Length: 560
Ligand code: VG1
Ligand code: CO
Image (cartoon, rainbow, N blue to C red; front, side, top):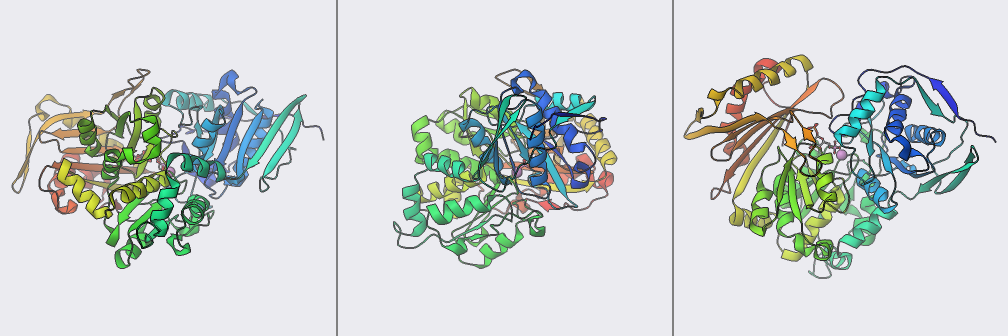
């Protein structure tokens, strides 16, 4: 059959502006006539001349509309001069797997089909993002260009007749305009598993997990929450590490995640938390829909904050073969993340960077060889093995630390706090608020905290007093390319180092989600209850922001 390129006339849609990590909207928005087509064409156009003859990776977390979107993208790439596509079988690839594949195959980039931790299904969210040739999420300048293109798009190119079956692994060759176009449908997990085996000592971990080196098998509960990690988890924890079948649950990726909200936190991963709290487990872990986030809990559901998780991994990084081989460069965290890792960096004499929220801000530092480990308070941990956060990698890192120390998770944390002190941390999320009042709240608060007289102001609750040292809307200059990211969140830093941070989410698909982050450091009082320790600062934050007045909310939807 001759394959003809069709040019289809279209008109712009409003609001195709990628947020913290790609464009996320309801499925019903994406499935409007030409909506997805428009956005995909703008992604392809944003690559300019480099697109011609290029290789791209395509895959997503298996949520509703993922497979249709993958097939559409294949038809559009065929018409836009791309030479080769690597597509996950059935359109399935975790976000870390896409990043790894882009790097391994020296591809121009990848199109990732996911709304990550947002619920899926016909009435919920879908998302598309572009990752560049370093394997990381496209930087702001790139996504701004995609958005600009989306406001002026007039047509898109497609080969509608191109027949493709992405349920079968194999190489499909087509001839388009005299040139070969290749669609290689690949095993979704093989490359990623190979990569993990290069990083960690699987032989040692297998002895530890199966109990050969300790006399008793490790009691694990790994919860994929019906997201994309299911297939990866089975191959890694069951087949490669020899864990028992009942160590993994919810391992079949479902289009609607079986109704679960695949966000690995104490609220949405309730099943895991309750099971581990009431059972006999050494470690519990959960991932989000696309597999880049992780939550770690110890025996009896002892909670490890992501900020602490990052710091502990940093402290023990040398027990992982990848870092023994490649050395340890600097560490980094997003601005709202508590600064526990800074203390480890200081002790080890490493550079520590504070970047805005979103993994895209770590990429340049990694590419420049200045950063090897980073994390976000939102359950994101990862290293320079790829350019995305990596949920399964984080669990393997924790198993390595447990194996290396021979200690329980709780004891590892207590030991860490005794060395470094403890950063108490909590995040309050107020989900799906009305947008306008939230914008007004943020601008009012910004005005109030940036007047000169705010500095030095003292807030008292009970016997605790906090004196304002710095207050601003966080702005970041990338140390490598000097690009500037403004207005990344309101920040009040007190003289004892405690912080209140407030920002609006950039990953929601409707309304506004307010995130309030509280961070407070104690050198010696390290065994307190976080909710009690942080209560005074929460009260102060609610007073300064007037959040209840603006949002009409008296309690958050999610507390971490
Ligand atoms: C949230 C998190 C942020 C994370 C982003 C993408 O963004 O706070 O730390 O990088 O999600 O994660 P926001 O703008 O909603 O606060 V994922 O796993 O959804 O790609
Ligand atoms: Co995610």
